[in-house]
Amino acid sequence: DKNGFEHFMLKEIFEQPQTIEDTFKGRLKPEYSDIVLGGLHHVFPRIAKAGRIVIIGCGTSWHAALIAEYLLEDFAQIPVEVEYASEFRYRKPLLNKNDVVILISQSGETADTLAALRLAREKGALVLGICNVVGSTLSRETEAGVYTHAGVEIGVASTKAFTAQVTVLTLFTLKLAKTRGTISDEEYSLLVKELAEIPKKGRAILENNEKIRQVAEKYKDAVNALYLGRGTLFPVAMEGALKLKEISYIHAEGYAAGEMKHGPIALVDDNLPVVVVAPQDAWYEKIISNIQEVKARKGNVIAIVTEGDTGLKELTDDVIEIPRSHPALAPLLAVIPLQLLAYHIAVLRGCNVDQPRNLAKSVTVE
Ligand code: M6R
Image (cartoon, rainbow, N blue to C red; front, side):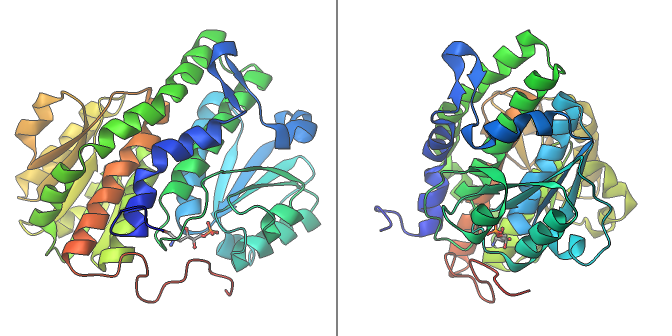
């Protein structure tokens, strides 16, 4: 049931504030400044003492893992590695009993992710899952884990499962940082409070849907697109590019903005839309100079900006505003306009957004 929406994907994009709230349920307790992750309770002392965390997934789940790498190293001060399941399973990865391996999968049935799980388990690592489907193979074969509570996701392009994964990973990071004593009480309480505000801010972004559709009209005939971001918003840029290529068949690449000069800048001309995730955070000045470099070569810049940022309005072709948030939580907001942009472009091009060509919802063969 599409609940009045034209496609499942749009319905699922609009469900995200609720998905985040559902993922918080029983876990985020802002009134006590507390986070409870029942599924990990019995293994948490082992996680807190781990020498390293390795996070593994495919596609969108891999993007969520990359965001967690930034968060975990920053707040919990624990070394993190992120790998594609398809690469990990065929290397000879060095793992030991002090390692924690986290498998992320919406379906819990992705063949490569399950193979990576079994390899990590054989090597004696503590194997955890972040998964959306209750009772899936991944949830059965991991030692412990956290469900994402996104509900059934029908659109082949993953949207609400991603925000739920990032929500779980953020809760996990804060809990781990608190346990390891690597975050101050003030910052922890602030983040817990700010996290509770994210669903409301997500709803505010969804109100810009029509504006985003109008932006999509301008770029629907693009052949290529570039997405740029820095920090946790670099994986968000990759996720935005993946959404666009999956459902609209426009060739899109997500890049770390600082890497632009090392290659992709050669693509910039007056036909190239460049989506820049540019909120007012620690990288703001750097991202402005990236925008200037694109404009100097006549590229079209669509910027995702902090509400009320008038400066970037003048510098760019189109802006889409997102509410101000703690920078660590920005991925949960910044991804929404990118999903909507991809969705509208694909619809305007007449594509089958819920079932794009050549793709399966769950990749159960390698
Ligand atoms: O079910 P999983 O999270 O393991 O699936 C992983 C990828 O196949 C999946 O995220 C894929 O990239 C999506 N179509 C992305 O929208």
